Length: 69
Image (tube, rainbow, N blue to C red; front, side):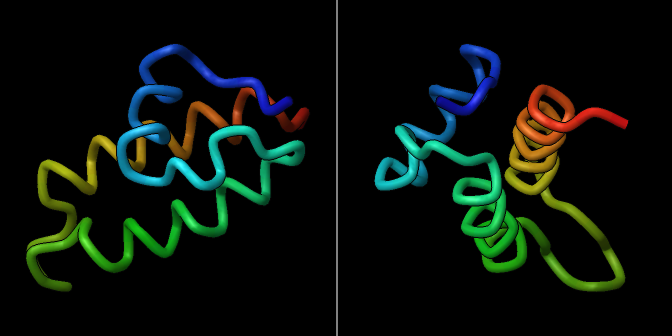
């Protein structure tokens, strides 16, 4: 089971429910990255929109919780 905060779990359940019970972090991180690229930017120049910031926090939480330096 992939380690993540409860907030991240709720986000994944809402936007990527098909990977919520993944056994490996990369099985969540790859589709989450795709979601960020698809919905997380207003434009390249403007950077992240509100959804992008939230999704990136979830990505960082999952990455940091499952991989050592």
